[in-house]
Structure formats: C-alpha cells, structure tokens
Length: 373
Ligand SMILES: *Cc1c(COP(=O)(O)O)cnc(C)c1O
Image (tube, rainbow, N blue to C red; front, side, top):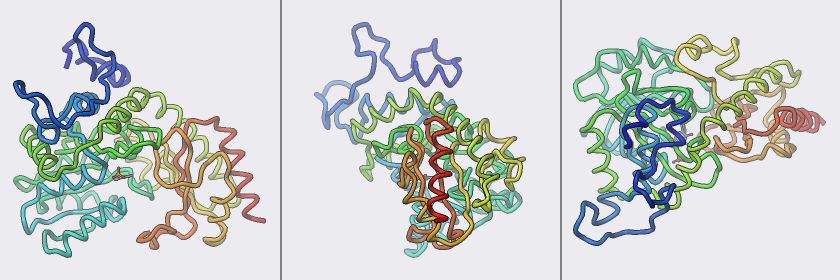
C-alpha cells in the first residue's frame, strides 16, 4: 500500500487504493490472465501465490476496515473458507433469519457430524453473548436476509469468548461503508462481492476481511487447498465496481428510505421492513450500529401469494430477479424460493437501485394497481 493513502476517508480510499505506484504502470491493475509465472520471484502459481489483480481488490476492501482481505470465487466460497477453520465437533451459532446458502452449508455439515448448530434470534443479544462463551463459530448476519433485522454487533462482539472462537459477520447487506464489524471486535467480516461491491450484477466473488494475521494466513491456505480462487475478470470487475460503491450506495439508500416511507402509506402494503423506519423492530439498534440504513426493503402485501406474484410480473423498470446490490432495482417474492417457505407468503424483497425515485415509485404503484385487478 502507498503510505500517503492511509488516512483517507473511505470514499477516497475506494478510488485511490489498489493501484501501482510505479511510473509507467497501468493506472488500473489489469485482469492478469495467468496461472503460472516465470520462476525467480515470489510468485510461481496463481492458486498458491495470488495474482496482482486479486491483490488490488483485496487491498481496497481490506483497507476499508483497517484489515487484510482474502478474495474468493464467490460469497459462498468465502463463507465456506471461514467454516473450514472449525475443529471437528465444533458448535456453530447461526441466526434465526439468515441467507439460505449459509443455512444450507451449516446444516449439511451438521448432517455429516462435522459440527452442531444452535439457532439464535438476532434480537436476542444476551443469547448471542452466551454463544460467544460457548460456540466455536459465532456466525452473524446483519442486517439479515430478508427480514432486515439489525443485531447489536457492538454488544455481541464485546462479549467474552471461548478461546479460539471466531466471531464472523456477514456484512453483505451493509457493506463496509455502513457497518464495520472488525471495529466492533469481530474476527472476520464477509462480503458477497457479487452484490454491492461489484454493483452491476455481472460477476460472482466474495471477500473475507480480518485483522488477525494468523486467521488471514489460514484463510489464504484454505483458498489454496480448496481452489476457491476468484477469476481474473471477476476480480477486475469487482474492483471497478468498488470504485463507485460510495456514490451508488448513497443514491440507492436515499431512494430506499423514500420508497419505504411511501410504501408504508400505501393501502395494499401491510408491513414495511426497512431498518430506517421508526416502526422497524430494530430501528434503535440500527441507528447505533449502522452508518446508513441500506438499500434493501422487504414489504408484505394485502392478499395472497398470487397478488405478490402478479406485482412481480407487472413491474417494468424494476426487474423481477433475485440477488441484490446492483445499480438496477430488482424484486422477488422470497417465499417462492425453495427452503424459504417459512417466510410471509406475500413478502417482496426489493433491492433499490440508483434510478430516479419517482420513476421507481410510479412503477411500484402501477404494478400493485394491475395486480389488484
Ligand atoms: C448472496 C449472498 C451470499 C452468497 O454470496 P454468493 O456470491 O452468491 O456466493 C451470502 N450472504 C448474503 C447475505 C448474500 O446476500
């Protein structure tokens, strides 16, 4: 890292870091399409020794939290590398509301007898503090998918831990700009860079960040042994996306707050789940631990699943698609996803993009009108 960058604000760091200082070098580290390097320096094989393209992304994302990062092939590859740290017979604490891929990974490991899983409500701060003393992996996701519950990470990360325990936070929905788990004392923070870091729905990548040198080395080793390496183009695109993260987030969460307020007034909407609304059950916690309320809104509709499906079919500007964190707004009915049938049947999860807020609102109102028939 270039030393003069070290006290920049995150918005400037995102733009300035991860570049070469050498005269004549490309301003952007290009996608380096190489599996192997000519022997003689510290890089021989990409899976073991990384590439400058991955390292540029890692420098930028790691530096946002004053930590070091390891980039992976996807968010799930990053998460699997954290689970890979567990000793046999470990105890894993998992949120009640949690990304379905992580639940699947945790349950598959439990079914094979690798570890046991204890589910804890994200609002149960005392339960999580107790888990810190008893579990080997305290897996938090906040704000959570899709109910957008905000955990009191400051209080949980400060609790005494079982020796060697890892406190991990899936920070995908907040991004390091809205929430800094490592500053609270978490061991690792995880990003699905597929979402806000990439920001354009055109790649899969994941990043783990830590301030623990030994954990960092172990994560690198895990990536090497499991081969969960990012693609050259994906790492390049993720960093290109990260350059504009602050701008995109600022605009999209301004849109989201406005849409959340308007949705709360709409006669077809029975519940709006947005951490920035005072009606949200964890609004007070969100105000303390988040710098911004984010771009995700989940809302429930009057009527049944067919009405919610009809709204998804009738949006035009908003696209009916899964995933989140892109410049384009996307929406889906979450209970329609296999394994998510426990969710409210009309819950729509909206990832708010950077479009004009009135255009987005008009699209939502028209689609709800059409669905009401
Ligand atoms: C998408 C997502 C993941 C998984 O990331 P992939 O890049 O799809 O592997 C994990 N956690 C959360 C909260 C996510 O939204």
